[in-house]
Length: 292
Image (cartoon, rainbow, N blue to C red; front, side, top):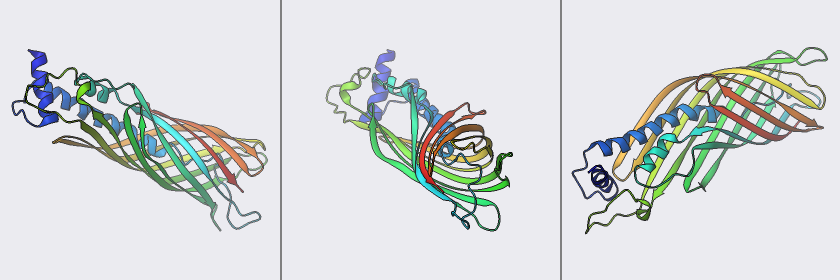
């Protein structure tokens, strides 16, 4: 009986032809998708802030010899659980072959020193065109800008210390197409035709973050560490046939981060990691840049 109810419920979602699908199995399916929206809203702000941190707490002023600026490419990744999405897919008889997605963050980064006052300004912009990873589609956009003010400049003895404020945005979509041949849990009644259907999850977040950083230039390496707090407004939506649901969340995050750069003349290879002590999400970033 349960299998029959599940079949009726899912056929009504995909084919829109059975009107009696108001049972517990349909509610379970929608609850799983709604749970995934919650996972998205919890994890996405950490993806927005995973990049944008350079090893030097303060790079110096643009007015000088040499002028202080830099530009390069960075690739970050942050934790993106898909447990609830996997549960929703499993209700159809199909399988999502991933337990957790490492959500990437690819960006062009730049930073330019200020003038008169000891500050610098950084920016980043990037994303991914639509990709297919193990059957799931993924597309991303991210950008951000921040300002850092030096409380203490790096010198022979003392480290550099700065405080900063930044704005970051990350958005995109994850999609998965259900093929009727995959729906082994669904008994399609005679006379009905069920077309393939795409489940699409759109998401976006806007983050404002305050941070502090300390670094020490040791000629060939520049180790650094810092802490940050942020506030974020995140929205995610799933669409499947005629079913649409949107979840919004205002959240706070508190993360620690650190790493080092390897310095070869004007080239810097930067490797860093972060951990959000509230959401328990992790992230990492690798960047290569030219910096004066």
